[in-house]
Amino acid sequence: MTVTTRVIPCLDVADGKVVKGVNFENLREMGDPVELAARYFEQGADEITFLDVTATVDERATTYEVVRRTAEQVFIPLTVGGGIRSAEDVARLQGVGADKIGVNSAAIARPELLSEIADRFGSQVLVLSLDVKRSASTASGFVVTTHGGRTETTLDALAWAREAIERGAGELLVNSIDADGTREGFDLELVRLMRELSSVPVIASGGAGAVEHFAPAVHAGADALLAASVFHTGAMTVGEVKDALRSEGVLVR
Image (cartoon, rainbow, N blue to C red; front, side, top):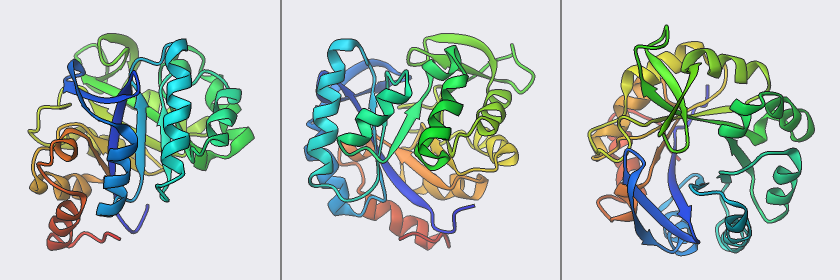
């Protein structure tokens, strides 16, 4: 997979502001997305991910404006997810500066969307966003959820990831709902299982709380590491994470 491990701050955006909670609940405001993105760019972030966590029709105009303003001053790849339901949505987001597009609920509802995006824009643009919970209801022990982890589907997370890759997904953004916001570390078992099945890069998300948490996720198979609240609160910087990775023999930019 990728030779160099990427460190990716994630901005969960609602009403034009960055928010963060625990297990996707009790969201609190964390700051201005454009200002935070610029700060992380200066710290050495490899990419920025925006996730519109409400994604209502009224929110879309806000998200386009946030992406446009960010792209004007942050010169690293931007991934945007939330409320993307068609190839036309992708085209419009690319028009304001998005480099990659994350899809989740809309692809679960209509898997053909993945092929439509990949065929038109290329697999390198398409990121499958997986909000995954542990569950005894599936063969793998992991189930895909929607609506910020509140609604369980019947989809086995590993089977869905495999199907999405076959349909053209160029990356897997694997977010552990169980670990999200807990700051107790990434779900390493989930990362390992995704790595074993995936022919595309795996982005580990959910649970980062200390610089020591990042290298184990790489050793478990992650090609990139995504975190949110630990960066927003100033608990650590992107540079500190990269220093910790280097000390563990992980290659970073």
